[in-house]
Length: 308
Image 1 (cartoon, rainbow, N blue to C red):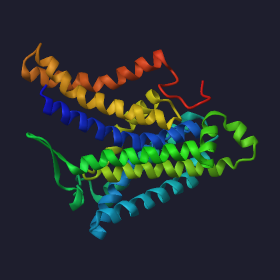
Image 2 (cartoon, rainbow, N blue to C red):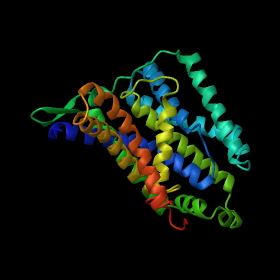
Image 3 (cartoon, one colour):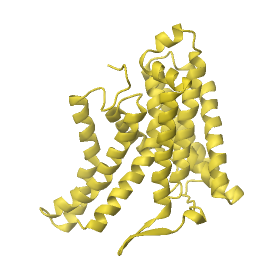
Image 4 (cartoon, rainbow, N blue to C red):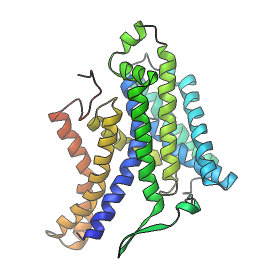
């Protein structure tokens, strides 16, 4: 592998990891604090991407579309929590899985009805549409750098909020001793609503910034939801710090693995066979890592304090 290709793959891995963190952060909070299995978290990422397309088409301004999309994603998440999810908190996990899976099907079909089945695209804003010269032979898109930066900024804000504010203290306590928090007179219902709303907004924001990078289509959140669950299991359920480092690790392994696995298989098989086997092996790497973490450290790499 050339140095240029290695640098590109590292940057792509960091950019993918930043997106994974935005999705996984909300998912780990909802799962860790509320003990609620929300399979519909991935479709909130999809909804964010479609909102970006709709608002960019309406306003012609990407930054305005980002703000409107985040506000709409937050409102949409709160509506889902109020009308659907809060009625499932006391139910067992099978009921939660079935109900949220139904929401996945409903929203995927709704996007087809509203926007059509064809894939859609969103152009990045003009001031982020160029590229930066990194080496004599490599130019890297500014928007991908901005994606990495936005992931880092959100991670820092979440860390400060969870670690140094009263709401963050309640979230951390709720993730480890929810019964004690309730016994102390904290409105658990309101805490759950805040956590769910923030989680939905983060997933929607991930969809918004992913819109200029990937095709927008129904079902686009299904596969990334699986990877997000891998991230929170590796990092530690309920841990923002764990979600951050695990997302970057998974992003780098997934991206680098696709190149390295193909190159390695090329030493054994012909180019055609290597191009078939390499990606298949690479797609297994993050799940092998998850299995190893579950064996060695079942609580994850960075479990929340007080977790056992």
